[in-house]
Length: 117
Image 1 (tube, one colour):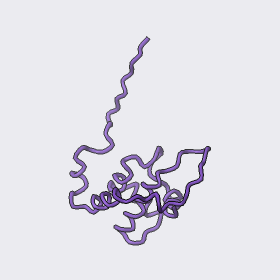
Image 2: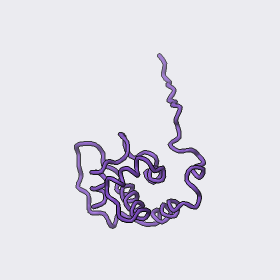
Image 3: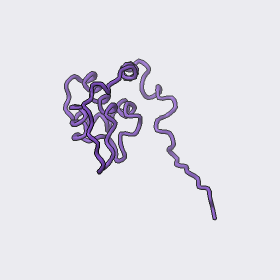
């Protein structure tokens, strides 16, 4: 009986090691992420009710990051625009740590709920 298995996929890294080659070093996303790393957003969130059924929720901090960064970059934008940015802009994927969710980018409903936290 074989007791080992090889967990290998051709795409093992979420992002290239040199992300600076894709996102320029002077891009504001680096400053934004640095500022967000020094802020404790938990004190601004509404207390969360525990849900025992359904899929796991999105990380509220990640949703807050994409909403705030979208407003910083584009001024006012709709949740559909934010959803589109999460689909197409690598900076938003980077803010979401490379894995927005199990099925893809956060949907407009999720972004909308995230913006009212």
